[in-house]
Length: 368
Image (cartoon, rainbow, N blue to C red; front, side, top):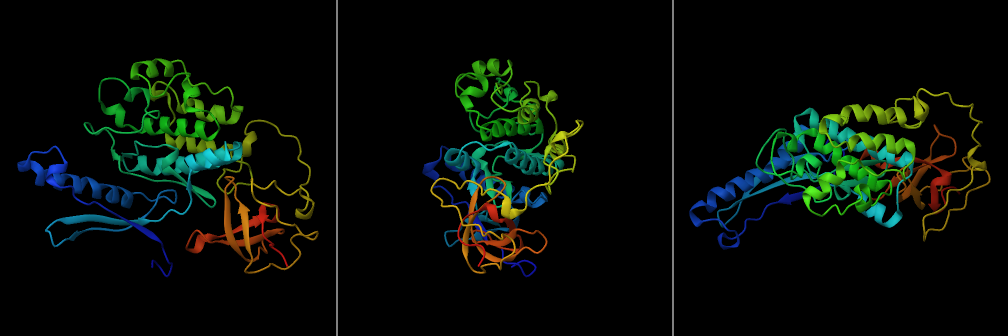
């Protein structure tokens, strides 16, 4: 419990290997093990420094003495209820433009918070982006390192920045610009670009071959101009030409639709005149959104938004990121005509009740 709110968490712990399971001389094994334990707890210390709703929080970290004499390091962190971006794209397909901008906003917010405290993530990829109702979160901080740290280097093939593929380990390999590059790759994949097509070569091939392909620029011609103009600078060959996470975040806020709570209010037509938009139809007139494969669209009442909420009814709704979520109707949203309030079954806390238009209900009966 925190402030009267129930939080679900997950406990991560490090179990020690036996001395004969690692190639460490017996005389150095204890010192090595202590170093590994400190590195394990570093993730908790790092997370505790970062204040962002797009990063899991840490509740507690400590070591637990065992009967065998080993102090097991552990920490409890917030449980992320959702699915990975890799899973979502693999099963549902590419995100549309607004979904992609929403995703970029959330992960850039996470990166800006990380870089603000002098850290870098180093392993940003679709598997480490979790999608929850209404937001995306960056997870797995095992490779996070102090900016400019030398020596320990890691990551995932296919997501290395070009400066990380040369034969020299140097300061720029651990700079925030490397995170921005990895985000560019991740957003391109979310938009439907296959990793081998991004550079026109096998991303798992020889480092020098991949670097040479990267110097020719990313192949993003299949994307619309808005996501292409956003992603292209992130994938600049020269790390100095890439935007900072904070600068890219401001760009995304200006690009988000005017009605988005995450946007700056300028909408996607900043600097360009837009024709007057016709008055949007009332909820009852809006065509129902196509249901995801395997889901039957929910019946929409002729007087949508006027009837009483079918409180307690289980429904499936589709959020802005295109994810379908199971929840329970808890009422009609009096502040937004045509919307109902749904409590998500997959999450806990005050933020698990969200408002959805009736045409985003793809299964269940939201109104009586």
